[in-house]
Length: 156
Image 1 (cartoon, one colour):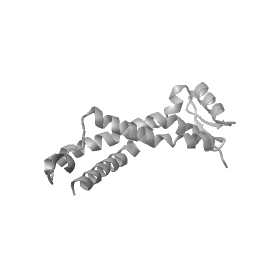
Image 2 (cartoon, one colour):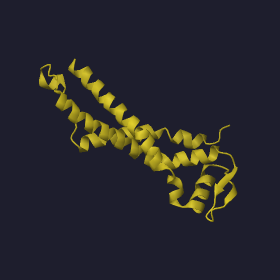
Image 3 (cartoon, one colour):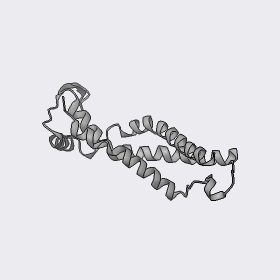
Image 4 (cartoon, helix red, strand yellow):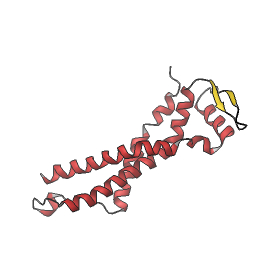
């Protein structure tokens, strides 16, 4: 019942990596709160062009931060999945024939060692790009909405 518990708990760092990456990207590319009423002393409403230009940047940085976080924590996801999956299954071997495989892992370190021995470093990143393409658009929109809400709260 608790197989994969430790890597699942370690995966909670994913959000921290994502927010830290996002903030670092904002600082690197010079994105600051442009529409802050406290600094301008007026109720400046940004133009549609200003909004679009900053929105594209926020979308890109939101997607990039998710890709960074996913790539960083993906080995933990692989280990968790391997620990939780069935111990026997079928796969296509190097010869093209369907072969029965058996995976039995005692714990997280046993799983890590076996993946590295059998598949090398690549084994920890199988499917990382497909996963990134799946999750990046959602994160891009989430961070755009986050920034727009912050702007709206400070302008109004």
